[in-house]
Image (cartoon, rainbow, N blue to C red; front, side, top):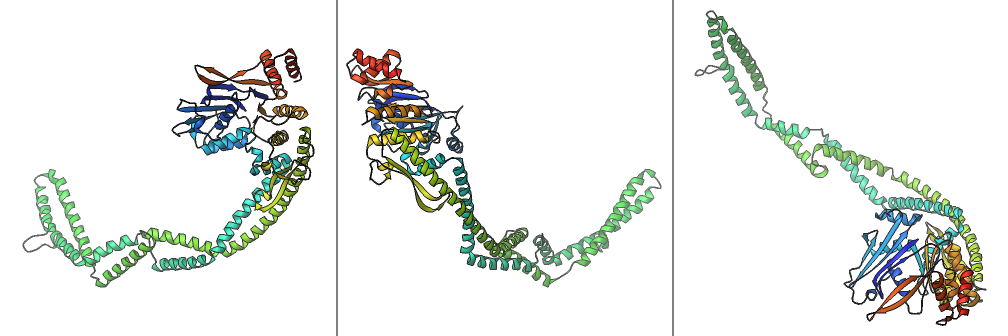
Length: 557
């Protein structure tokens, strides 16, 4: 419910804070006192249209702020959670700032939001019924939801099942349509994938093959140079030349000399062993080098083979990947996709059967849903007509009209509330009911019926008493009082019969100071409230009779 409304520099309101409580709250005051400005400010606070003329003369900005306690409103909480606008301790603050520059801001709990989101949040919190406003009950998009809630849990469960089946059906149909529409493309793609897999398989690629071939190519291309270098190394180590003895010869001489030296100095033994070991190692290295030299092959044809193989690998790399590993990985993916494509005919058959089952289930539950709605519409018709009878609208006919529609997540019909206010006239949509007084009472009747199913916690009626009096006015007053037991209800009224039933009574008034007019508001209690009711009953005449009548009205609550 709404806890407070704060208005700054809005119209003739310089600064005003209106605390609000549960139950029935009324705003009264003389014609032109500024009650409508407060309602305008409330509309702006909820995301309604904002005009530059709302900003007080001489001011650059205006601000309206409404504080709400949101309690148990699951649909609102879902919107808040999805947008990151978490309520603080179940409180929600809507702030709207208007600027003459046109830079207006909307904030939810201090966080700037778009006007669209801001207005969406506001729609969950308060329903304002003015004579020319398109109230939530005039929104045909909500009629089905209201009728379904009115019906109760069985219909809502059936509706949820229909929605679930419809979504599954649509998903299966979409996949089936995709398979059927892409049949030619699938055949073409399957042929291409088979060619690619066969091409990669026929290449007989191996991991690291390219690196090995590059290394082999380097050897084959330089075989003559490699053999020459190996021979040169062998000569230096072992064979020697006429002008230069080999390393083996030189080390052998050193071993002989050190062996003789040992006869004179036994301490030379470690050095002799080291040189002897070096001699053996050089001899072994020379043998290995000779073997390496003898195995060097001169294969002119092998070089061409390597070049051709590397060329083939490069060609496959351009088509399938940057390395042999990636080419082989591409092939694995192609094989998996080809298997899926080859199974598409079986998938098409399975999906076709699945769609048939979904269609049969949908028809079954949608028919049940229609039947439940027809029953709910009949009950609603009786309930609303009773409410309107109580509101002195005898002979008024109302019905929730079910109109066939395409199969959808909510069934196979649309719902629209239609009403005939005069005998013999065909029912018309609520939005086309012309009389403001009739429309106000119709709205009041609906709100009384839907008070237990409509989640909106706060209602505002702007001059719901227009054009009515006598017994009708008394009936309207009692209906408003009944409604306030379910929902916080605020009424702008000129009728003392309604004002006397209020739990909270505010008096709106104008006052002038230093050639400036502003609007103020006063909470009335005790004798002040009696005087305000007396003014509403008899104008400026405050006779004892009028005052006594005012007291009697208060005593009737």
